[in-house]
Image 1 (cartoon, rainbow, N blue to C red):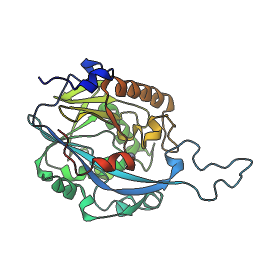
Image 2 (cartoon, helix red, strand yellow):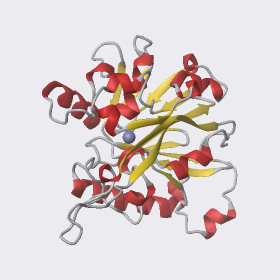
Image 3 (tube, rainbow, N blue to C red):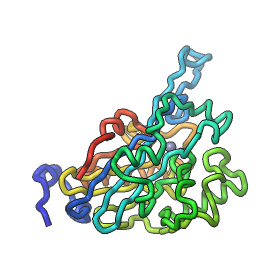
Image 4 (spheres, rainbow, N blue to C red):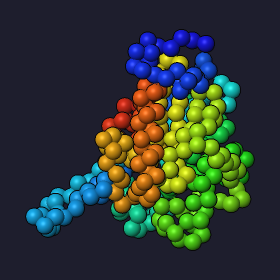
Length: 293
Ligand SMILES: [Zn+2]
């Protein structure tokens, strides 16, 4: 095993939290799946709100530019792993009104399609051996349709699968989960119910309930590039995570979310990792087009 970098030891890293390291030869890519914009009130509690002294609210309500991305891990023993899938093909039309107006696509290039983005990183979507899902909302899992009838395992926390199917079947949380990619018989669902699971060499998944009941984040410990923690939408943007501004209209179980946020902050400290929120343009964009080893 290689030695730990001196900065990790100096910065207070707790070694057991980074001992599960990806094997030499592992390559990680963060791939861009498109750009959106929406009212800040979706992402921050009290965003764009009115007050007594400002009863009409901000003259120009704040909007946020967001990005969608997936992570590809070319793993020597596991094969090609895909973390989340983006929204899938033709999503503005598939989502329909009013979703496609509230979460509006701001820029589109054919290279933002999942298969094209994987090809841009040097692989084929047919090379994907396993899919890991942070949560099953439409902008992270719409791309699952590409894996129908392939037999490829789709890994998701048991509580997320139950929430998503329950929501679609009953209308409990309408709009954020869609039936069109939650196939009961054409996807090879695989579940786990662990709070923390060493999913593969170098890859650990952490259950972070709150934004959804079964959301997980993915920690990847790389030999040269260090640790990355992909939070899915536990944090849409960095401010949710730190200083910890609660999510707005997309928040669900706030006490659970708060506890998950505390766990994540400890994990950042004990791993010295880089936190990558679900949609933060300023953090994800610089990662595109690079190879992390
Ligand atoms: Zn999202």
